[in-house]
Figure 1 (spheres, rainbow, N blue to C red):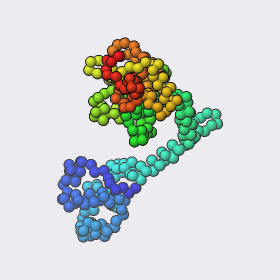
Figure 2 (cartoon, rainbow, N blue to C red; figure 1 turned 180 degrees about the vertical axis):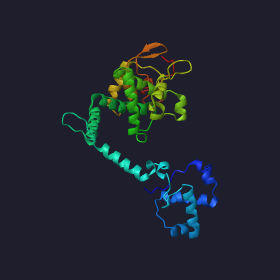
Figure 3 (cartoon, rainbow, N blue to C red; figure 1 turned 120 degrees about the vertical axis):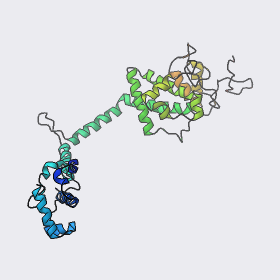
Figure 4 (cartoon, helix red, strand yellow; figure 1 turned 30 degrees about the horizontal axis):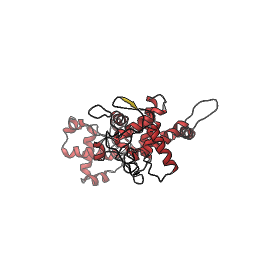
Length: 323
């Protein structure tokens, strides 16, 4: 088969039969190889025209090549197929590739008289994927991602209109949830606590907040290593970093949550972060168990320590250490 290239071996430079030829004949020998590669059939007249030599020179060249065993009487290169492989032909490679595709289109699995095709297998895989998505575990994980993203946006002051929960961000979070699910042997509460703590630690880092290093994916869910680092990150003094600036009682949190639920316009001072922490169980601060619910004092109106001043204004933040 015609081919745009052929194998040229390094021994051409050292072969005595080749190197004893004049350079003009060496060049013509290479041209003979090129003609054979293209599978061209040339007359002596055509060869003389292509090589820009006379018919007498063509005849003399042929005589020398025959004597050295390079060609036969019909200008066929001796041992060409021995030195050139059938797999070198792009046509042959394409033919084999198409044949392999055709063989893969339908494969057989012996199960009585049942024949399973690749198309049927693809449908089965799609059905299995859909079953996973319809499973309670997947629904729980998906709902958890949505709730945690709301928590993240509130804790990091992200604009939900500009920073949205894209499919890629969901996918990364889902991978980390699956990993923590295995770590905690199916304990959903512990999985949720891990995510809450990772978000809190990022929100409590002045370095990350001031530098703008607060991306959902890059700083939390990019990889298992990144999530673990965010989960266990501590201050230099060994205390776990958190965005909490004070501690509220669980009762106060639920009172504020109820007030906000009954009157969404009220300045009740509780956000999603409050509710999530109230649900997630006790935390430890300075080595002691305390009730959850601490929130940042710098999260704007309605995010203070929940104190009221003598004039009746709500949510005036108390100084640290105040009774």
